[in-house]
Amino acid sequence: MSRDDQYEYFLEVLSSVPTGVKRYSLEVADSIDRHFETVAVLLRETLSSAPWIPDVARPTRPPRPPPPPPMPAGLYRRAQDWVSVNRVLTAAMVASVGATGVWMYRRRRGYGKKRRARRASNGARKEVVVIAGSPSDPITRSLSLDLERRGFIVYVVVSSPDDEQLVHGESRVDIRPLNLDVADALSSEAAIDHFSRLLQTPQHAFPGAGPHTLHLAGVILIPDTTYPSGPISTIAPDLWSDSLNVKVLGTIATTQALLRPIHESRDARVLFLTPSIVASLRPPFHGPEASIVGALEAFASTLRAELRPSGVEVVQVKLGALDHSSTHSNKRQLQPSNAARADVLSWPAAARALYGRDYSALASSSPSSVRGSPMRELHNVVFDALAPPPASSHPLLGPLGWRGRASGVRHVGHGAALYALVGAWAPAGLVGWMLGVRGVPPPAAASSASDDGRAQAPEAHADAGAGTGSVEWERVEGLV
Image 1 (cartoon, rainbow, N blue to C red):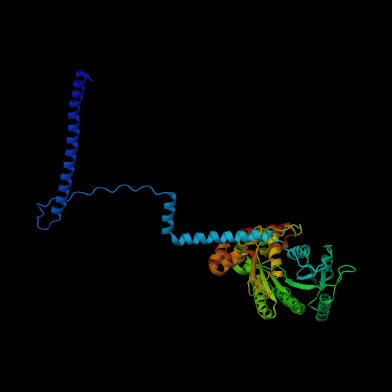
Image 2 (cartoon, rainbow, N blue to C red):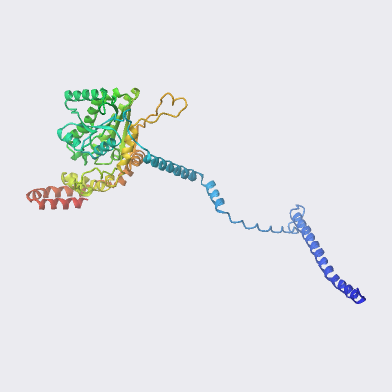
């Protein structure tokens, strides 16, 4: 390196010395400032809390620095905080969602379940079901066709040649009439003797086939579902007597006649199919239905307690709204509002004034006007009640042939379980308000309406045909 190069290098080194000295000097000064600031803060805090310094000379405590703003919580953190605050609501939501999921799973599984009656070793039909109901009733007809399709031999109880002709009109070999007139004790006993011998006699499905005996799977009792309605004061005692005789006493007599083959079968099931909506809500103007269904429910409960020791199960199927469009005849029917007006026309004037408005409102809000559940739900429930449950998988009870016990009460149809819950827990006034019952009109209005009815009654009877109908319809419209 030449002398000039050494001189230039020495000058560069000398020129960088002030910059380094300046930087180091600033760092030392900043460190000293921070140290003195810390000492000053500690002194102020110590002197401000010292009790021996007067308040005038005591220095003020320096304000604390504000806390840093919280970081925004994520979705999971916010959900966790909400659950920790609303534990009861969260438990209710989880329970409702779980119950809904289980119900949907069981319903889907129930629809996909294969339901067929047991057959004999030679493939012939052996399971027998007796249906005690009117052959013209849509529920009786639908059940008989479905059970026959699933492999049962169905006997429908008939008491007249017309009913027997209706059964033969189905054109099904395994849907047969069972002549049982409970009004005639001798003929009824003879019919039961013949039916019992039929169950005990060996049958041959075809020539050369091995014999097999029939087995009574169950008896289905379907009382007539048509009931009179209206104020109790307008329903004649004869109508009450006819309804009780046909629906209550007739059902009891039929059950008594069939008890002998039921006991002989040992494991037969007895099913009672009764409407449940009116019986659960007990609304006004439905006294006959509420009374009759209540009597049938009490009879079914007593019969269940009597037959349970002998191994016979009694199941009550409470019916909600069902869709009978596939089995019901295409006869033209009145709308609920028109039928209610027609009923009101047959009442006395005083009854029309007192009950006409509430009766029409109740008829217009009747659950029967709502489209019901498909009949397939009823078919599945009836088959599950008739067929014995599978043997228990319990390691101790399963090999012994233990079988589960059937549920004593089952609900099927739109609103069956819901209305039962509402009728059991909701106040009667709330139920009436939901059905449209608003109370009796003031006495002045009722008396004026009844006076108008008495004054116009002779004129209405004097008119002919359409004139009478129009006057009465206008009066009913005014009350409604």
